[in-house]
Length: 142
Image (tube, rainbow, N blue to C red; front, top):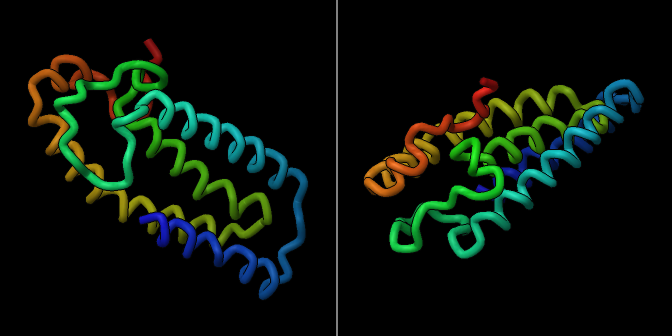
């Protein structure tokens, strides 16, 4: 998954050069702010996971459910962060086509991964008790 993430984001410089995309400050600066915020969220999520974090889908029920950091509010903050990174990075360089294609490809890729991960996580009654009522991606605003 990391190679795909890097692969489709490497299209941004090609798009910028091929289509002579100018830097647009009104797009680049907000996209950079989103990119920095997404990186901060991803680091916070990974730090909260501690020994739970890995790149593969594995059953880690013996370690217990993580409900600290951003996991207090949602079940998948790392995926939220990566989604915004994938969308924002090309937009910093006005590579809107790459942003669109990469975001759609990333959604398709993550759809299956998250479903598989949820099957494993939700098979643990302790996880369901602790995290099952929390939304996947967007915190409740109430």
